[in-house]
Amino acid sequence: MKPILYKLNPWWEGENALPETIPRPRYLQWLKASLDLRDIVMVTGLRRVGKTTLLRQLIDVLLTDVAPSDIFYVSLDAYGLESYSIHEIVEQYRMLHRHKMDRKIYLFLDEVTAKPDFNRELKDFYDHENVKIHASASSTSLFRDQKAHLTGRTRTLEVLPLDFDEFLRFKGVQISAKDDHLRESHFMDYLETGGLPEYVLTGDIVYLTELIDSILHKDIIAFHGLKDVTLVRDFFRLLMERAGKQFTANRIANILGISVDTVRRYMAYFLETYLIYTIERCGKLNQRLRSPLKVYAGDVGIRNLATGFRNKGAVFENLVYLWIKHRNPCYVLENGNEIDFLFDDVLMEVKLNQPLSGKQRALFEAHPAKEKRFISSPRDFLDQDFEAGSK
Image 1 (cartoon, rainbow, N blue to C red):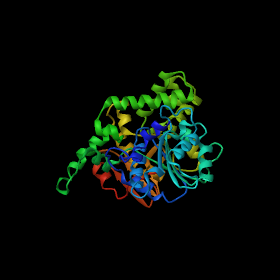
Image 2 (cartoon, rainbow, N blue to C red; image 1 turned 90 degrees about the vertical axis):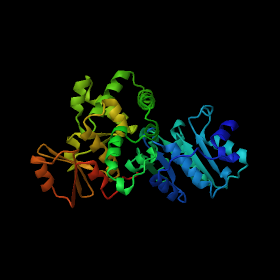
Image 3 (cartoon, rainbow, N blue to C red; image 1 turned 180 degrees about the vertical axis):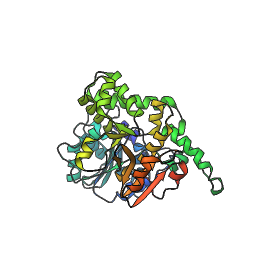
Image 4 (tube, rainbow, N blue to C red; image 1 turned 30 degrees about the horizontal axis):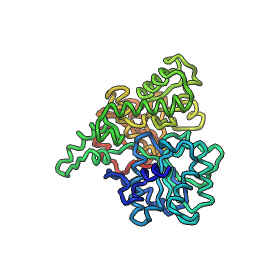
């Protein structure tokens, strides 16, 4: 085990934590602010969205104040560690550095859900050892703490795909005030590419295709023991086609020739992987439960690869949703007319290069809200005065 641990922790031998990377300040600041809290930090989000890089960037920050031997990073799905528990791995780390049990250490447990009993193990660390723990995973189902071992002991950071400013930073684009008109052109590139960091850097379609295959096979088909691979792929394509639209289980069941219960079960599987998100209709409980959900893709680049870069209005709405997701929006539906989002007493309709007219305009004007925003262009989007959230 020793060579594996040294390979994963190059700073023990005076090397950098990772090659030079592009920072994502809003997440890194959140992580830095949590360092002095006892809580276990759970970092989650879509595969390849940048969770591991963020953990290693935080290690770089720590190395300015903490002895390198007090920082331990391990990818728990690493080859050679399959047969060891988290406690056995950490015990080996302590032995390597001759750390006493009361010495404070910083544990970075990547892909923590590779260990089946991780919740109980983390609780034991938290309750009995002087540790600060950061753990990551790419599935909400795997993070689920069914026996409530970690209740009251955690805080969660969900990492989203790059926002537009981050996209420009990863592209190496700096736009001066006199060239501000170029922002809209770059925004249309962003609308097509999405925000998965490696894909933004390389534009490699094969990379994105393999990522989708990995999520479908590892996190859905293999994890849930599904036999019909074609059905899973068809379901995925239908979800991407429906991004920005209402999702009716009965209709999808008819299209695919499966039961409504199967549709609902598959929806839950996809939600767990962050490939999709859903929002409810605004209103009383019976209205929310009886009305269709609206579906949004976890990354518009994935959506565009699955469907082609078309229906740009839906893609634009999807981006706006990701930008306001942390505000828990719902959608307004009255007499067959829909307004895209309502959150924090802000009513918002999104249309790319289209006017708001007819009955929809009447609903938008009549519906009570403290503030109303009509976003009809990239410029409208870029001029908004609050930023996307990080959790």
